[in-house]
Length: 290
Image 1: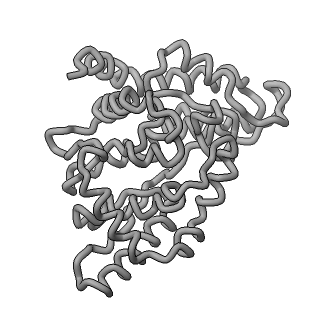
Image 2: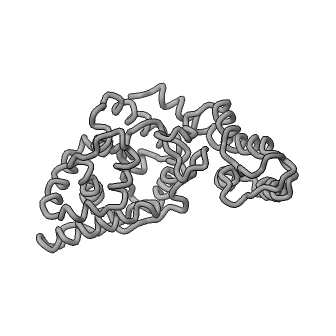
């Protein structure tokens, strides 16, 4: 995970919950990808160290166990860069230019100069991160499968030249690869300001949930509303363990018999219940940075 700021609910749903579950059946390696952070944030590196601490604290607070899994900082294992260099010698530039997110990220981060070789070739560094450990599987969302397929092609090409040296990694798809933002956008993202941080206090969570995008056609509580695709109900499905309550809210919402305030307040309560153990653990860890 790149150390580019504090983690939010999107990281929890799209990665961390899956990472926690994988600790039991697999030998797992989790690292702070500080070199990957340089692909977009090379111009300002001063926050990286604190962000690295924040990442590790949130991982442990979410349930990752450094006694069962391997934690490390990418730049402290220089062999990642060595293998990245070797892979760069055999990989055609055209393969990197066709990665779907290459142009998408350049458009999304138009305020940054992403014309660097490092940004173009970050999929090779990702490949190195996996191949160096003979990684059999990589936990990814469906939006990352194209990256992993490129990694497999890079490994196959390398092996054609030098023998059966590296392992082709397979995807382990997450159940839910992304969480929509509070504004109804497709993705929760710090740069879009539509997030709830894992470290957010209870009042802040309640305030942000109250501001969430919902059915825009529903101007009064007595107007039947749409549940499908409604971010508030999607969050209920993910974070509210009381299925009977969620079903009741959906039925009344469709019938125009419940207001957005009640629906959102119950979501905030469920979210805070899920986050409270993490807040306590996080606070305890932050007091012991060593």
